[in-house]
Image (cartoon, rainbow, N blue to C red; front, side, top):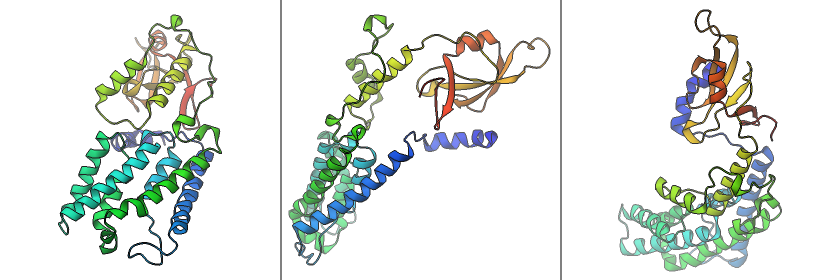
Length: 325
């Protein structure tokens, strides 16, 4: 089984398949929230326009892109792409661009592509990137004659009504769970660790350092500044609880080098010593996660001790320091 996992690791890296660390309960809460959210969107839109609008007599329009918005506000309620400004402006700006492109360049094969491209650019500059907005812009072009007949009324009905409904549902539903309060401004995580004084830290990263690092990435990161810095602070506090290398390396146990990103690695120390000869006092280890996954090599106990930051265990699909949640 381990050999199969190691063989599939390169494919997993290329596809960027990450471990989902959310609990089963959290997954079900997200699914139920999306179900309720779309139901609210439909019912509220139908209540506002019981006889339809424009040429849509007899039924209310439910934007398909609302399904994508539901994924974000209920499954990733604290993501940057899920926040109210992103949802509101992302849909409305994209809708305006989509309608404008259709009016200026009707029945052109490239009109839909132009609408989506301009919508993405506008959302970037207006700081309201919301992926479903691209679908809203495209729908204004390829939605057919009934959608085209709405003209700029498309921004109000169905877009604005649908957006208001999904946001109301997101705020109300996520408010039932203290750790999911939406928008992110309403969420305040309870610190579980004891803060460490700055004077005790060898290097104390600042908000400015973090902003500079994000700038160097030159790529949009789907997490708010508040959540990102909070996550970093919690990680630093967790790291400072045990900054020493293990005193003894024991066979059969797992150790992490405590690095970040691609340099992170976990090794399992084998109970089988190296082959007899000059290396008989060396320990065999296998890399079971991170950099070099699947590699097997050997090193002295002292070399492994200096490499290792702390002992870890696999719990709930993720590697954690031994003795911690």
